[in-house]
Length: 218
Ligand code: DX5
Ligand code: ZN
Image (tube, rainbow, N blue to C red; front, top):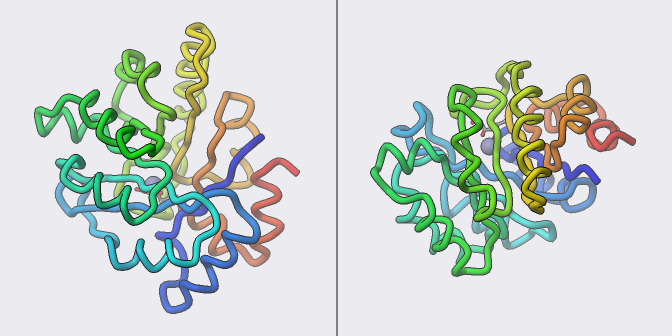
């Protein structure tokens, strides 16, 4: 079954409690984008906001780290209640860190680990980690900003990763993030996506409840 993860980046920060209730009542996962202004050219939010969300959330928190040196903060994100934490392979490469060490660090807290890549990273670079992570996050826009246009190549990239997961007989899930909407969600699902991150599509919709149902394929 498709899982819908509204991205809080597109929520109404003046009425965040209401949007948290919306996700609790209508969606599956909270997607929380953490940006550092270095790995991506933007800043988002950090611990105070995520703690506030965690205090009211009844659905799992999925923390997407778009930061250099993710290992510095993983323990704190686990402590504030993350159920899933992903970091970028490019960030680990840039830092000279071993991705497997970071994956182990996430797992040491009983948290699900995800490896993310931007659209310009060959998906084959994920293959050696498919057995180590719980999910992979394929960006369908370049990480850093909400509200960008979906990159159609993503469909082929998802299929390639899905084929490899199937070939290896692994339970690894595929998450897609960026520009996901009511037009591309069915094709993404057919290609093999399990977890659908959607920011603007959900929070800017006139009928949010119907939009989440549509994304679910209902
Ligand atoms: C982008 C973030 C996304 C973003 C998605 O760097 O990782 O999660 O919030 O927003 P939409 O769905 O509006 O493209
Ligand atoms: Zn994200």
